[in-house]
Each structure stands twice: as structure tokens, then as C-alpha cells.
Image 1 (tube, one colour):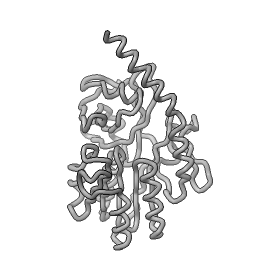
Image 2 (image 1 turned 180 degrees about the vertical axis):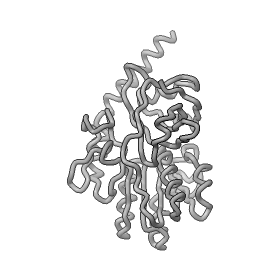
Image 3 (image 1 turned 90 degrees about the vertical axis):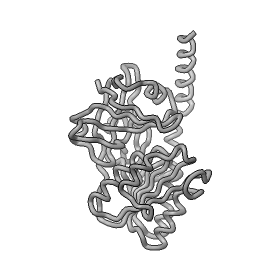
Image 4 (image 1 turned 90 degrees about the horizontal axis):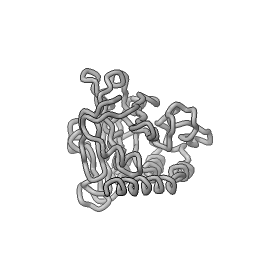
Length: 280
């Protein structure tokens, strides 16, 4: 059992859990992930490490309420426990030297922060590009400001409610045109990563994407997380989650991400109806 030490709510549907996991915290690295199962009948779902502390023995992950499982997770409170948590899984992000742009979109900012922090700790110059649909969904700004000054922090919102109105590719292209970065890391919604990749490719700049496809076991056995990279089938859980973004088949990934939307919607509806019946 993994005790929830702290629960933070960022917005109506975005939460962070800090859980007690001393052995996991000792081995966690930026870019890796964990698999969570809340109950005996629950599914296993992947979340990337948002933070960890080996000395205090905890790890953190951030999630957005989308379907049945994340709805169930959001209802847990401090002091409750998760049945199973497995990790660290996946390959850590490669800390190559250079001038980096680290791009995070939406909940992907939870992944981008530890990666950016590790790049900075390794002595690299880092520009952090933070994107969200609206100001209320912008995560971890205070944390990013601990590693980036104003010159190196770029914030965009789709609706212009905070920072620059627009998408993350605008500041990315300016940095590439000015020669301010020579490596890019991106994580977030598939369209954001796809167009970040196309932007970086225009300037022959290497770009890494952290992928989060559908997963079941997180060990490469089920094959659900397969992605096409340079025409070769890879498994995000063991071969990734980081891949050369210019070689990812983004259209295939988008289709795979949508594979179970009907079933997910049906499961959530049944869960909500069951809860309403219990409360009467």
C-alpha cells in the first residue's frame, strides 16, 4: 500500500499526489514513469514522475481527471492509500550537453519540470517554454521560476489570459532563429509535440519527444504502447518514453490514442450512474 502524504488541487480537474515510496524515490530519474492501480478492480495507469525526494522517501505525480480511473483517484484524500505503484519504469532522459529548449504543454509540464531542472543541474543553458489552454491550467510556474530567470522563461496560453497568446511553437521558432538553442525536448498533447517537431526540423535542430501512449503493464509484455519510429515498431514503456520526435509517426500515434475513447466514455458514465444510485 502506498500512502498519500499530500494532495494538491491545481484546478477543477488537475491534481498532484505525493505518495510514500522510499525505495522508488531512491532510484527515480527525470523522464521515467510509474504505474498506479488504485484498487483491486482498477486498471493500471501510467504517470510520469513530477518530483521525488530520496531522503524523505516520497514521489509525486500529476494527473488530469479524464475518465473513470482518474475520477476515482481524484476522490482519494490525504491518508488514503493506493493499492499498487510500480516504478521507476522507462529510460531516463538523456542529459546531453547543449543549449536546450524544454517545452511542456498542459499536464506535460509535470514531466518537463524535472527534465529542465536536471538539465540546469548538469550545467546547461535552458529555455523553458510553458503552454496551456488558459491561465488556470498552467502548472508549476513557481517551480520553473526557481531554475529559469525571466529571460529564459516563456509562457503561452491559447486564449491569451496569461503570457503570450498563442502556441509554444512561436517562442520556439524565435529561439531557433536567434540561435539560442541547439537541442529541444517536448512533452504534452500529440498535436503540440508534432508541430514542435516540424518547427525544430526546419532548423535542423535535434528534438526529443516524451510519449505517453496507451499502456497496460508498463513492461513491454502487452504491446499496447507500441509506436512507429522511423518505420520501426517501438514500445514506449521499455524503449522510451523518449524518442527522436522527427521520426515519430504522429498520425499513427493520434489514432492509437483514440482507440478506446468510446469504451472510456461508457465506463465513466456507468461509474457516475452507479455513484448517483448509491447516494440516493
